[in-house]
Image 1 (spheres, one colour):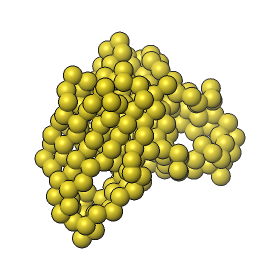
Image 2 (cartoon, chains in turn green, yellow; image 1 turned 30 degrees about the horizontal axis):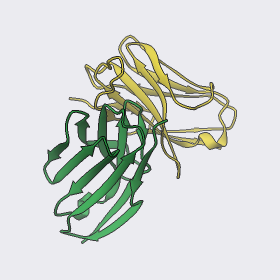
Image 3 (cartoon, chains in turn blue, purple; image 1 turned 180 degrees about the horizontal axis):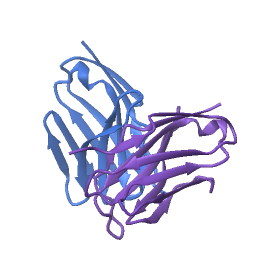
Length: 108
Length: 116
């Protein structure tokens, strides 16, 4: 059974800082790993999808990496902004298993 | 291009009643997924439909059921509602699923179900 863990559960940083969110999974037989952000009471917004054949994906200030052998993925956010404040979730596919999320607060 | 839509936005029911939630996927998407996000419990996978058939089911009792229509929209039914069914129900869609692969998912805004 796939289990996904996200560390830390919460993170508070000053504006402008670079930060890393971690996601680990127990079953390396994944096809894709997807990162999302969720604002309070809202649905999920897809940020990045990394296919199993890829090692990383980039979109703007976001960079996500995937290491299947170690069961880890990281989401790097550069030059954080208050608008980045949200809960960030990772999901292992095809198992459709989500981590509990990291609640990020970027202080102005 | 319209995103995933869900209705209603909010639903209030009493214990023992039935609730019906609806989801319309992005045009061209044939897979629909349902998730439950209860307070403090994270996102839990409920059901996955593709091409009108149930592909997979999460660890939920049979009173959670659904279906997918020929236009790929989907309905989630929850019978004999219990207080702990109160949650945000999220629907997602993706392009056609392969035998094992699940493609990038796009989520709707959710339906907030409150059971009193």
